[in-house]
Image 1: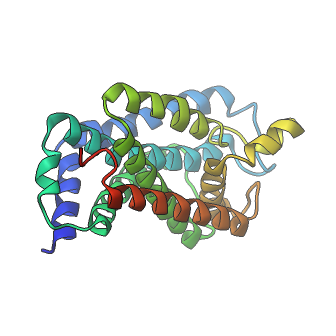
Image 2: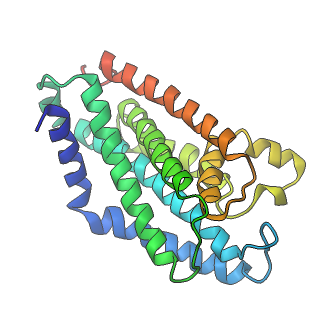
Image 3: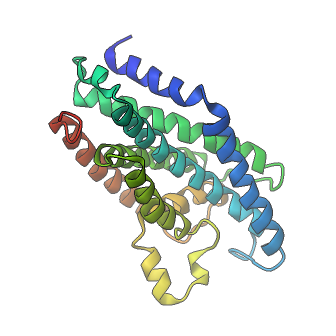
Length: 251
């Protein structure tokens, strides 16, 4: 294998070796959300007039799991390597910043999609879904996982200890994920909060992904695609710049 393929294989193997923690646990967490929220709100909330609340909830939980686990994969790998001191072995190799980026983001995409698929397969026992636009599902799942993998790469490079990484995840990633329409349609919000939701890029990832299942959404899928694509390009450029300059990994 070439350098980037070897590093990609190593990163995939890293999370797969502890799959009970990195794959099974997030699936169980998502199922708890589904059972609790679905049971409590199924008879009280109607979405788009024709979709059951539990069915509406499933794509949001799937995408939330994809995003959170893609971020966790690249960020946790880098911070662990920095703290344990084994990052030096990667620095000794002739790998380019492109190889690092492709390997770390690629493994994040794999983990995010594996967890998302697990959530989807289990959730469909509780709420059978249609697949109105499968291509949109795949597009937003891959782009969302890539975006969060690149963001996790930035967070892992910036953080010097686990506390800093946990703060980034708890005060940035988690609030933006939960306030992105996972558990509700933004059409049910007051006008001010609808406008605020449109400033959240996570909303477009989840809304576009949900469109693939139902063929309806709160925003145009093409608008969501443009915003998610622009965010992915911007975050990727920043991540590659930090890797190229050796930010906090060469000193």
